[in-house]
Image 1 (spheres, rainbow, N blue to C red):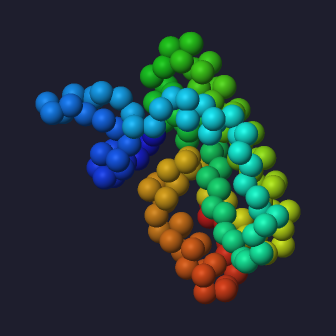
Image 2 (cartoon, rainbow, N blue to C red):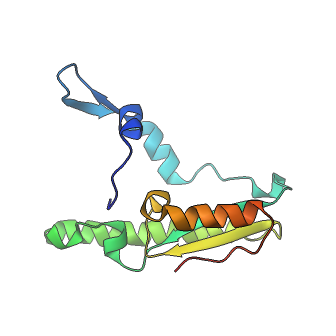
Length: 140
């Protein structure tokens, strides 16, 4: 996904045998399907303190699927579908979050879900500004 995931995250989310061979992910596919379905909606109406949301906003399909150029036609079609899905999920989440005046939204353009690994300085700056009560600007 364009970043090196921390080894600790891989060890916490993936199972390997004693020889180091991949056995599968820790999270069952049934749970992943429930999460992806969006059936559980965050209750932003019950949060009354200030809150910060940092949204990665991809500028292109390569931001979401860095290996897009290497895909065949079927893979590219799946990539296009993934980008539309991600854009819809992010737009829906953001519209629900920013309805409340105590919430602050920061966009980091040209990034994907791993924005905190791709652009750690910008994410940290947004968090520091938010926590200090200052103005929080979107990163571009």
